[in-house]
Amino acid sequence: MNEERDQFEGHAWFTLSGDVNSDMVHRVFDAAADMTEDRVGTAHLLIQSNGGYVSDGICLYNYLSNLPIRFITYNAGAVASIAVILFLAGERRYASETARFMVHKSHASAPHGARPDALRIIVEGLQADDARTEQIIRDHVRLTEEHWRIHAYSDLHLTASEALAVGLVDLVQDFAPPKGQRVTNI
Image (cartoon, rainbow, N blue to C red; front, side, top):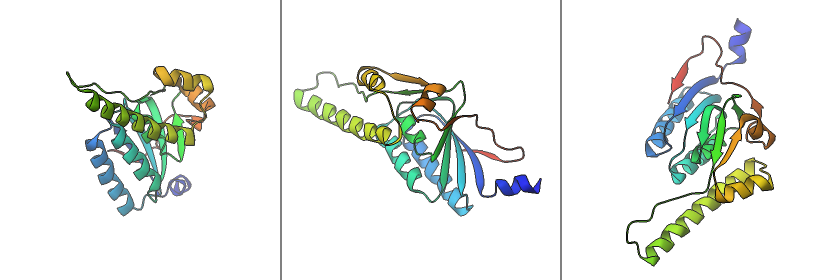
């Protein structure tokens, strides 16, 4: 029993769900403050999200990637859109056999009656967001040319096995905290 406890010394388990937005950023900031105070060395983070705002997702990716904590991220159901970028902050990444991922280009709705200069600003913002997220994906994942073609015009869906093949995950494995370990919802 002591051997198992020693094996997980400095580890903590967390769940994070919902839209990637300023509320999630605030919750993660608060949780990370607690983690550093509690001297967590490795944080196991189960993410369940269909996405949200690009800037908030990139903020969380950069923040978690640079904390003095080793993050291991898990997908037990769905990680989609900008939540995939958040998921990539994990030094190690796992997905349950039945989990799914989805990535796509940025999108927005133009206001009714928008003038060409306003539309140009919207398009330039979307292109900048796509460039930022694509760079992060390329830094971590080896999508095939066929995947990139699909991504260019549509939603790209990946099963856990497909995610393993392209390096989005390191292993198909469930989020399974050891018995007796606390799981904290962020």
